[in-house]
Image (tube, rainbow, N blue to C red):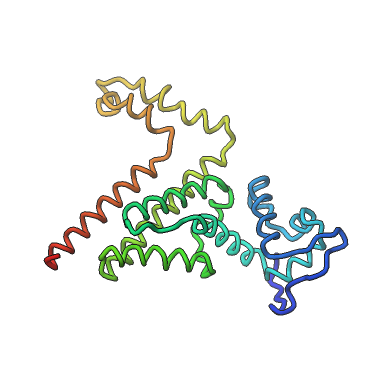
Length: 239
């Protein structure tokens, strides 16, 4: 997609296309997400989107100026899928734990799209809602503003990074994933203790745990550190 700006007021198409499709930003984003999961990043082309939508490819410019504009909308929709069902309970650790796990699960549900968009900053509605909500959880818990921002940054980057990492793995062909998972059993568990004592001692645990994501454990370490920091802050202020 090349840059081709259409005034915002002229972007919406009220009448169906020749194929009977009434276009909208939501429909285009949903279709793009489906195509990305089927075909990868090459799906983000005007021609392929138009064909999938049954619409003239040029009509997509009524809603998105170029490919990157559409990619940011896709990234924001993935955030929205995390945020829409989430409701804070007032228990800050539980709220952050659930939200982080939702972010990670959302990435695995759309692995190719997540790998394309996890590192982007959209500045759009759902991202703004997420930033506001997470900072609110931390500030209400009692973190001073600099600490709230520091923990927010680490929390979000961790969830997105693990989401992208595990999504990239999930996007591999199944045979490749299975072959890599078996390396822990066929290679590491057979290394001799005289040359690799640490691997040999922990081999059963490596085989048992390395097939899955370490995100839940990493998230717990981060939240435990955040809780310890909050206790330090409260002790310093005598509360």
